[in-house]
Amino acid sequence: MTVPEFQNRKGKNKLVVVTAYDALFTRIIEQAGIDVILVGDSLGVVVQGKLDTLSVTMDDMVYHTRLVAQSRRQALVIADMPFMSYQASEEEAIHNAGRLIQAGAAAVKVEGGGVMVDRVRALTTVGIPVMGHLGMTPQSVHRFGGYKVQGRETTHADALLNDAKALEAAGAFALVLEAMPAPLAQSMTQAVSIPTIGIGAGPHCDGQVLVLYDLLGLFDEFVPKFVKPYAHLKADTLQALRRFKEEVECQKFPTDQESYQ
Image (tube, rainbow, N blue to C red; front, side):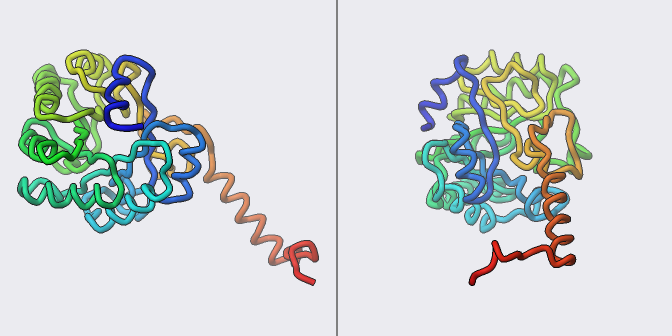
């Protein structure tokens, strides 16, 4: 999967995107035939145990992007630009995006609408593909007062639609649409010629993305309405660990079978 191939899927076969943060899960995702791996700053919550993504650093993102990219064979790798890695200036945005590309990403993702147009244009001008992100943008959680659905009011919906068009005009090759009414996401998908990837945005986007730890049922401290667990690996992991603990304490493990003679 390349950026042009990704764009050519607009309106055709749905694009499938999953987050990953390490080599092991990247290999498993590749075996499943997933189209795109997003190295998301969501790692701050599901891997680092923080309350939000705001303290994730560029060094964090470069490290995890490199782990994923080194194990990638077929999927397109896109890396999130963390909070304050691109907001301050175009020069800083280019420098930090370049670090992620050097770490192995094929593209970067930035959050925000019209105010990010100059950043998107600056990055694409120097040859760095950019995916936009509209709706519920986690890096703006304090401005929203929490993780809340966006675009329910007509004026806000119109603003998001204009943002989508502005990001496309600035050179974005795709958009993530998060936590918004399905009809709005459908209108935005129809209004732009670039693919839209939904997460809590209904079925009408050109593709869907979920956080790996959510879809595997590993992370259950907060489960948004749009998350569908396709496995329950936390329960399986707890069962395995408790069995291991019991067998060690009862001297049932290791046996001769697990011992060298």
